[in-house]
Image (cartoon, rainbow, N blue to C red):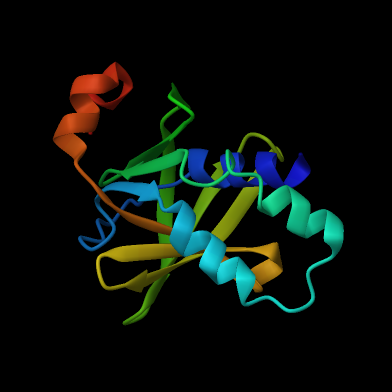
Amino acid sequence: MRLMLSLIACVCFSCSSAPEQRLLGAWRSDKDLTLASIEQVADLSSDERASLYDRTLFGQLVHVWGTRQGISIFKGECGSPTPYTIRDSTSNSITVEYYDSFYEEAQSKVIYFGVQQIALPILGGRAREIFIRADLDALKAQYPCLSSF
């Protein structure tokens, strides 16, 4: 349960004050790509494996990144828009900083870029949750919370 809440919190608190064009837009968690990433982790405990292979956990999260704030949607429920700042940018990653209301403190997350996908570290960096581009216009039609994105 704590892992699930950490993932939700991670999603709900992101976006930049200086736009990073490759990040902007909507990203949907991809269950199959994420589970493939997890399968490569050799030292998973049986509890970790059981909680991570819950078929309702991955594929339910959408991150939407605007130029100054981000918002997450988990299982159809919108989080609150949260300001973010980009602290570092390389050719294959960026580091965002945001206030995490679940942990009630500032957090930094590294987001890795692939071909039409981004990845967020999970399991202490041993695996990654993979997100693929999603249609922002279609999401806006479905979720009023995205009207400012």
